[in-house]
Image: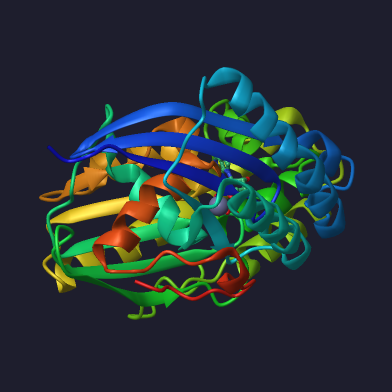
Length: 346
Ligand code: KG4
Ligand code: ZN
């Protein structure tokens, strides 16, 4: 009988410190713990994430979470540590690296570096404590605060698969555009959930913002022109009423979603994709989910649970399974590294 694999996942690339312990037996995933210490309150005052404050918080929160984990789990034990090696904020990654190195040395365990962006994709495979492998070829869309990228995945998730980037944003990421437009509308950071909420109150919207570069037949994105269009629209309005804020939020959100859907649909068609996978903070948006479910046909859709769309450590632990499948080796503490610009490595 195959032994149970116990993985400790650690997340620290941005403004969430996370620790998760999972037990994997064949295809069964037991989530023993999934702890998160959010820093949103601290960064809210500044309207966005302040890197050195994020680092300071990780330094404090990661050991605190580990203490909590030890309290929650009797005879805490794990086989290796999976950690998010990047991409992310350099000061945050440096603190996280120190933490995982120290922990690995103390427990005499090895480590597996995981790409944070791929972890956002793999977590959508988790359905009711089982990993469901998407049929391939698959198209994957990553929509987070720092990245907007679309991938083609070929091969077979059981054995050999290859992830290739088809396109990415040329300027702002989708989540970043949500945060910036929310700020213009007077909402706090993070702006995505605020825009989604107020947009639901929009009545008859007769406003049109651009769908940047939607006509280009490539797979790149651009959201900074859309953000500027919102800025100039608001600048010309004397008194901004609540109804107008709802309309702006609605039309902005719709413009982002139209571009995301066009790229997705064309990629699915061009590569004969059998499944569509989404991940990253913006995928927490239920309006986006409804819109995609309504408009995508003939593909199996893999959407992460809402609470796992944004940063968490469970996704790091789950992703590490695919690194093992691809033959990636565990590393000793002194051999690990972090990379703020880590590229897709599977
Ligand atoms: O993946 P994530 O947690 O962190 C990064 O890796 O960047 O994504 C955070 C981003 C933020 O920009 C936030 O505004 C956005 O995800 N977000 C949303 C929603 N919830 C979070 N955007 C739109 N609608 C939402 N409901
Ligand atoms: Zn993320």
